[in-house]
Image (cartoon, rainbow, N blue to C red; front, side, top):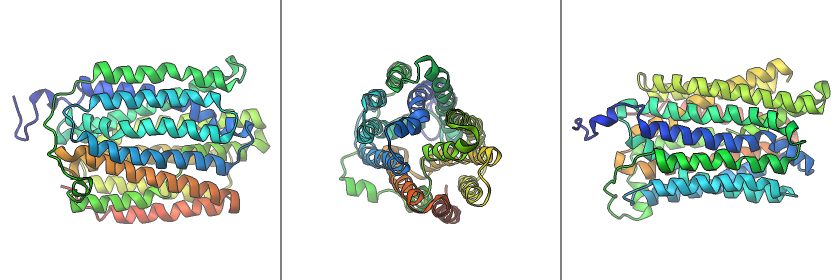
Length: 401
């Protein structure tokens, strides 16, 4: 039985087997790479690398992944089945993350992170297209909010796992990185066996340029706002480094690292909790306005870093704000993309969105890391605050359906 828009009645239940399978894959994949991410600043410090190296690693990896996202989105619109591409992407991410343990220099980590994020880039638009195809437009917000919540639960379990395991493996980072293979491979298994994909009618052949030009004008305005905001939206690893450096003189090195990891767990708790809230709001209120509120919270977070003493309490507020605004940002950007772009172009739409975000991540992490090393935190995070405000203003001009 079908609804007016051709969606089967089975798909009117937004929490179906496919949505659950994708959510579990996100949980286990994030569990794997967040174990690595939570100790990456300390690992790089042990290798003698600076904040600029951390920013470069995060930025280059996200920038490389952005090209994979664009290509994957364009290519998979032309396939009858997208799922095999997603499975391969999850496996490459798992192996790339585990290979951090083979590094003996910062550039080795750069290569491994880039490989892992290449796999992540390939799978991202495919996963989002599979998710959008499994539900109705009226429930996009809740479906994407659920996936973000599950992804973030992995980000909660990941750092907590790192805190527990690191002493048990005698602070041997290679052993810890190797253990990330377990949840990483399980994530690929959930996509392979739990996600049900109906054979679809491929989009008729069109060149990459023609497919890009076919995207609607409101979506292009949306991308401009996302791009400006993303150019200031630095990686969470830089916040972990900030907390570690600011707390080290007061708490000592080992305790500062543990507290910074704990703050990152708190960030992800708020991220998980607010993802479902953001999804619920997205299905009931204008999406652009909810997204603008999230962007404004990012500007407030950057302002706190610049203007207040960075003690435990200020850093707690910073990490909480980060968790809330990222939940709103990621849930609403995906939901608004699905609404602005026709279903037969979802692969291309999500690919372009992910690419814009990837380029933004490259610019933001690399620039913030470089500004931090050269001029200090006020200049680095002041740069972010300006772009956060610009993104807030522009997103309010986007007219959704």
